[in-house]
Image 1 (cartoon, rainbow, N blue to C red):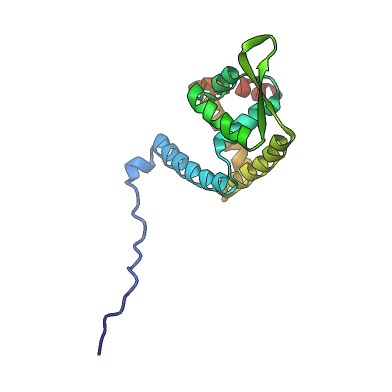
Image 2: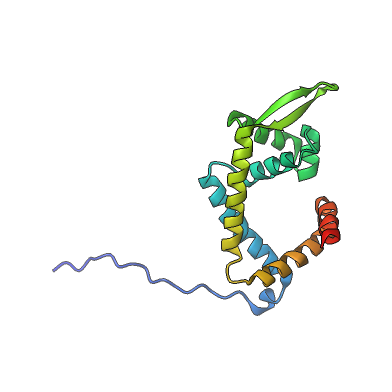
Length: 171
């Protein structure tokens, strides 16, 4: 009698991180950041776009920074990387680029109606991803976490300083 049957490999429980590492907020932020990036990237990929596309469209929706250079500076993107992202958005009909009539060396980037529709879908997707990731926290805990992260962002992320200051003034 042949007893060569394939048995599933036993599943092993996840090994716990050392307590010393888990006691570090920076370690937890790094691990959670990696997890959040992986989860959100999958969700955006399924939608046919990328979180970078969402950031560009959200910035354009504010209506203040329309040149390629201003977009790159505001989002902290390399100008070469930005051009590729804009090419993708333009190919999808979500943005259009025009020469700046006041300075022909520059291009203005404008969101199209299709881009506004995509932004609405991306906002819903971002809310869904965030909701899933923060599952297990109450609304008050989510707000507290956001407040603390924004406070750290003011110190460590120059591009968040103005937004954080405006949010603090509004609160």
